Length: 312
Image: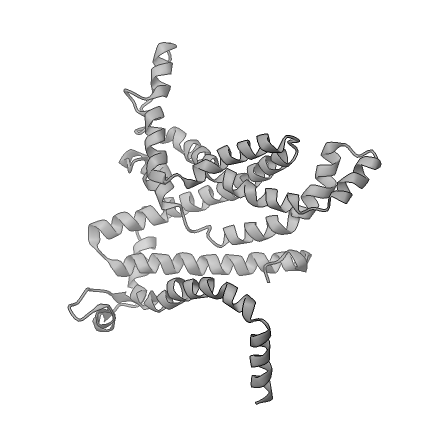
């Protein structure tokens, strides 16, 4: 009884904060925690019935791990796993690097109005859908009317059938991803840089430290905890791929599948052709479990070196 009174007292003291987090809590409960019950579909041969969703789940045949074999017994299993992992590793490493560089460059611009203009221009691509980005890229890479091929033809250079040649697409996809996401990521680091105590920079300038030395000795160490946390969160989704990037941007070209097909697009195409909802649920569960394990392992490694930089 005493513990209950203590709990209610704490609730009353912190009611303002609880009200502030209530919308986010409701959102997570409705869209993240309640849907977890649907994981059982991954182990069933789900068929839509007339009696509603729950009744369909209960009545569906239990098939165990049969749905998971879809990802591992096909010839494309190695390709989609390789593509998903390698692209995400490139996105994490290059995204971190370029976001940091961009944030530091923006923080060093003395004209704040000009800095805000640059920041807005680089932030804008983040709000564009992948469908629009795909059409933008198509206007550049179209074989007959694309700007790149028209310039190449004018200069006497052989034109390239971009949507039939997979050679260039790993680089194209990485560049498009960075163009769209780096501006948003840099804002997070820029906000952290603005929160660094200015007296540290003033003391370093008095001691004769150069701009690079101030960045290396003050800015980067203060950003290290944020860099670690964001990297850990990104590792948790390393088996997830941005569906729009890999489906809309290459325009679903079959000849590009060896370098553009990832787990998400593969499952989507399989769902369209077979209608196996259990298979797609199994793929999502597989991605989530692997991501959870990777986050736990990565967080453990970070804690071994510095507890303050770990997620928990």
